[in-house]
Length: 279
Image (cartoon, rainbow, N blue to C red; front, side, top):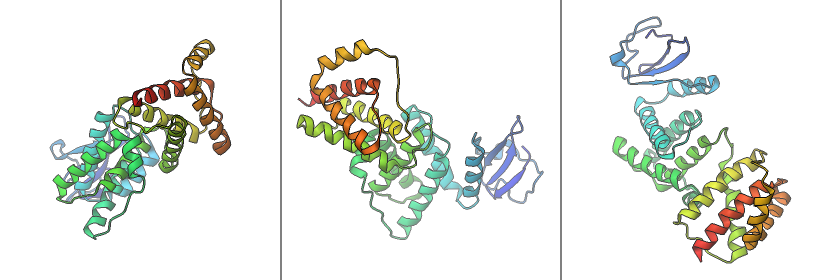
């Protein structure tokens, strides 16, 4: 590997076999070296190839200032998250999570604690992401002997939620607010309290997350046009159908979003299941 650019003692830019830039990390990898020098492979710890050029440049800028250990931990958390979630994460997670970890560590060392006012909703709606956030807090403790709060586990979960989407939502708070509003309509329509540990509530929350994402990005879902199936489900789950009509009216009035027949059908099914398990 030939050095194309030096970011700091531990990070350099080289070219891969396709002549594309890659970020190469290793302790002291650039010490007493200059552009054009060769790097032995045994000194390389990690290699990053980010498809988005703009994200790659921002990531490089961030790496110039951050300790190597923070970047390594961030990479470990991201790899764990990808395995646990089984979903592709947007490359922006390398910037947002790495920067957040560094900032969180600095805040704790300065005795500054930031409250996460969405923590309760994060635990309800994003259980998998929150679990990874809690695991990340354990990893921080093990690596740096710094105890982050569960509020920070919630913040890490939000970064993961952002990165799960095809493109950034930009405002996870708005996403969570919509999920909360829909959940409240269901709760008051059926006069129930959800069993938030049930697999049906988990599935309902997962469906709502992507539904809210489509709403915020004005992307209506249109599957196979099966009007006959919709009519069957509408009759079978009449009360859930009435509830979905309330949701549809609320979203039209509050967000100017028209809920398609296909989206209504899936909402009816999820709501019917989650309500049935509570009773």
